[in-house]
Length: 430
Image (cartoon, rainbow, N blue to C red; front, side):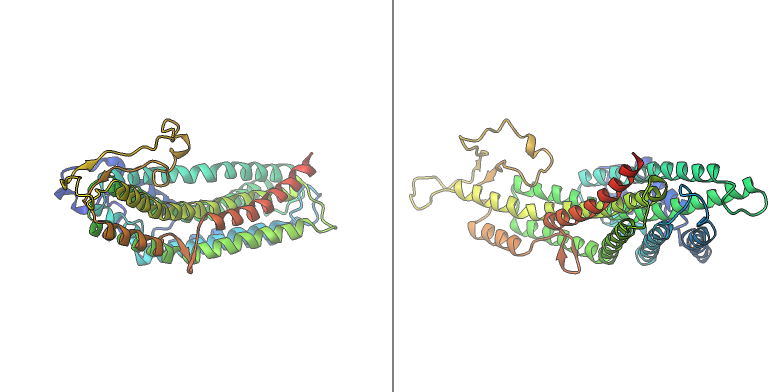
């Protein structure tokens, strides 16, 4: 990966005195995160180290843990009948995430991949918002990973502390258990974190485009030519196509693997000969929570940006309607032809004091826009609205638009499977 000491702001920032380069905008968190998970592949030595860590923690440790520490002769509290599903699921997602991150790093580098090289073309508001989101990214990783790590650590410590006499060991029992427990926790942390990290990368790229869309919506609040509106919309659509192309395989594999692992866990826990309790199913439930969380991070980001992109069409249509209503009636010949700015219109029957429901979305609300009469002709406005209606932007996966209808269906399926598993675990606990 290219030099991570590069700033979040573009290199040519010295030519723009309107903003400075605060130290907080450096890519320190990402550099630290990539180095911590050995994802920095800037030279041959780091590439070898990165792949070595992957094979040891994502493949070697899980295989040895499953076959050596299966503990089939242990009591029912220390048996691990679902360990194969857990290890296979985590390792599969780690492999997909690691290969994806390695491919992105090799092809683009972090600046180009996160569109940091394009920040010179956006406003200061977008730069500031993206900088804040970038700084929160690693904190978000900790928020999702650390609670699950704490639960996994508690389970592992309990498992080794209460079943030390039944668990196979090599040499000194206590030293062997401590080393093996540490390796298992490191493997679990590595595999879970690398998947969540890939999801956060996706969320970051989507967030920049959301900021650009919100900034783009302001063109309907001021005097603007249709040519400039169309040019900016084409740039945003191009960025959305790039994001869709880069992440389409990762999103598809994540969705398929999460659904498959959930269904497989469901089939295993519903067997009549299977005894389900918190000691045996707890780790499987924790694995499912981690994977479903990562998937929802991606799907929520994709759905949000698609909704914002398609709301532009409604905003343009509202702008066109307001401008048409406020246009001069030239046929009467009584209205002067001077170019004036119309005030914002407010329907008499609308209560404009209650805007609580519109606070979360500036693009899709019921507020009318200020009209600049005679600035843009009716034909140009109509052509722009027609173009937006027939060229809806958004995130796609191999041509399929990721919208709210699709996310509601996926959310219902995944949540139903997860809650069923958690219900089995909690009911048998009580």
